[in-house]
Image (cartoon, rainbow, N blue to C red; front, side, top):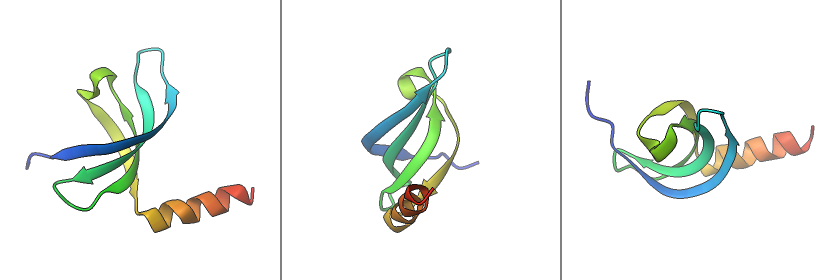
Length: 71
């Protein structure tokens, strides 16, 4: 499996934290040198491990925001 490279450009928000220190974060991340996208996933303390997540473009993030505001 190819090595996954990422750079966290901006930590937008910490959404929650588990008792073991894992944090669910909304970050702006560049994956493998590509344009940054918004990313929601769990991160271990010191970010040495990550859980599965979802990556969104800015347009997708704004669409999600609009949908949630209607609820």
